[in-house]
Image 1: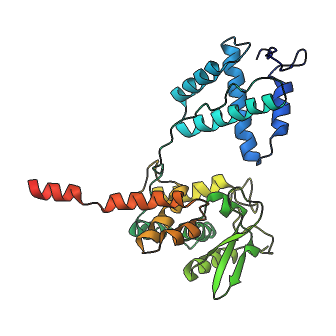
Image 2 (image 1 turned 180 degrees about the vertical axis):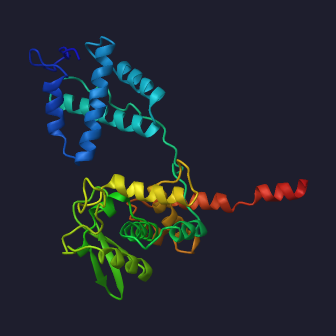
Image 3 (image 1 turned 60 degrees about the vertical axis):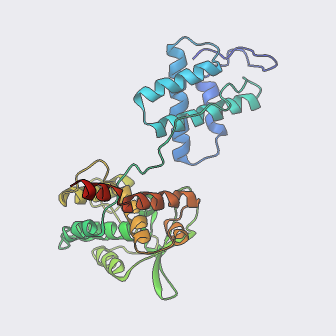
Length: 311
């Protein structure tokens, strides 16, 4: 990427470029989770590549917009949104450092659909999947426990990955699992663990020799990482494999579908929106309202009324 030229009263050190020097300074400035830093890093490198390929020495607002439009041709709206957020933050930083004007201010990312990208399962479909997991093997007992926990507690794969044995505790008359949720540093929230799910987890733990409190709740059984904390990728694989085995082979059915399933079944069962929000650990009730909106539409019988009138 070419050097950022002097603009108005913004000063750029001689030879400063948006390559390693400026890029490293920006990445070092970020105060975010490793995953967020990784995303922003990827976005800025993509922007660097774009302006280098187009011979742009002094990026303008129009160049950032053109970069966004090019992203739209080959990336999902969520990716475009994240990349533009990163570019906006980068130029906000360059302005703070008096290096370059904030040319990306107020530039929009992409319009994101409020509908869920993944489908949920009905209660009968969940029963079908669980009934198909053979529990006469170590792997089967572990996989059954993972699936049952995720679908009853609405857990994300990262929450299952982070869970330790000592996080399984008693609160009042319930067994609960304390969670380190997405973007959280501590285990401040919990989900209640139904008796059948606790029984499945205990059965899985009984297969292991080392079950000290600080050990992971679920471990890898693969040859390369046997006994280590199970990865989020493996958790997704466990869920996907058992969905496919039960006949539910679709890109819209993944590990995240179990979280959608839990919230949807909670609302269908008569729980209030506020209860579902607390259960799902949604920071904003608007997120929970998406579920309620989708269910309202699903209950709408206009199509049946029209069909009955015609046929």
